[in-house]
Image 1 (cartoon, helix red, strand yellow):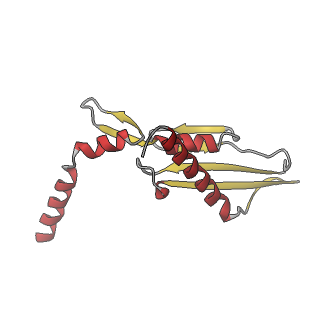
Image 2: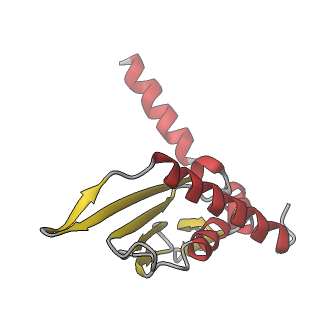
Image 3: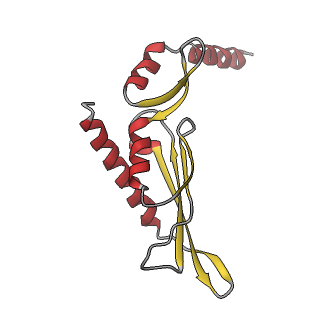
Length: 147
């Protein structure tokens, strides 16, 4: 019973967060939806969002959800490798500009006589894309006068 009481008290205290925290996050580059009472209900960091779109601008975008923080590209083939194609999914996981607030997944296929088949992706590809997005996000923040 004591554990249940502590758990309920913890949940209640967590729900009593300050609006100032959300306001600080919103002013620090958050794209958000506000509810009828003016509270931020959903959003992602706008610097990470814009940097992701800038970094992936060479690829066709299939779907982009700025409030859920997911960008899906369509398949892209480079001119010098028409038998290989790749697709990228970016997940923006935080309202703050943080390195762990971003996850990139890369998918690759190669064409053969039987059609397109999944192929191995160099693990460094996703890391390099994440680094490029984070670098661009920092540039955007500095250009906007953010600290």
